[in-house]
Length: 89
Image (cartoon, helix red, strand yellow):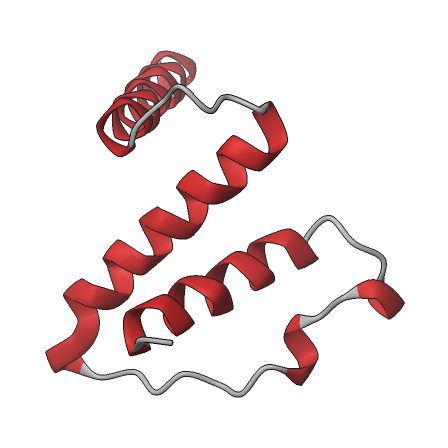
């Protein structure tokens, strides 16, 4: 398995564990990743890919692609940014 694919698996497992009981979590047995400035872009992309896989598993939406998913994320950021700005007024 490629290093990037391992990162995706690490992040996906950690995200899924957020919804599991403590005794069902898998991320405790996964070896930690090393934070490296040289690989930070790759790490962020692996996180986005893990979010994308989790989204498809939860929603069952097999027709969406990565670009469509990032569009959803952008809409959410815009929506919640506007909500927080409106509540400050």
